[in-house]
Image (tube, rainbow, N blue to C red; front, side, top):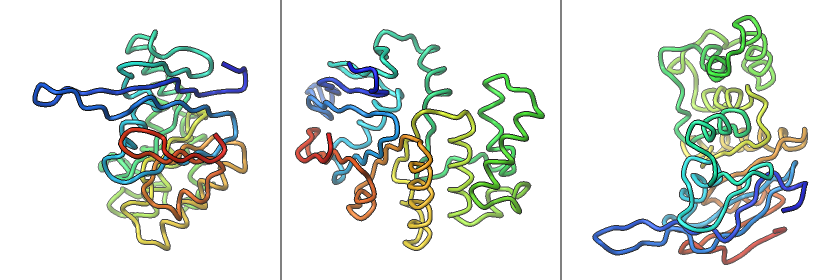
Length: 229
């Protein structure tokens, strides 16, 4: 483990039992991510991308192997410690936006800071700044159903950034968007990477993966093609 690796997977396997038989979703995945990387995890449906995302995001644990985040073995953490790690070190952007429909854009972005115990005035200031940064300064008090798909995804990006995480994990972030809007969202992620954020993009689309500096291409739970790893 080198000091500069903020995330490392070592020979990670994930096995499920279905119908009494083992099914290997991941088969010995190893990769390392340093601060400022832009990594794309690409592959067809059923290749293990979603499982890899869950492992990388500390939403699941490997059956075998180890995951290190900032040098710490996540397999030795309890669920409460993992929840803190997810809240502070990883920002999530999902295909379906996952915004709370009864909360405004501003309130959605502020929400993660509530769980971090940040005072309300600071929560509001940080959230407002991020929404202005993603071009939604005029939409602070709009509900999700009053925003376009692209605007909702920008809210989701602002929410992912609100705790100032080391890593932004984007799972098929353009999957529910038209191609033009999708390119705008990818441009936002590229911009964040230029500013120093570490981006991990999970996608099945080669044209999106092409924006990344590093690539792990999965088939049948294995990395069969890599760039920069």
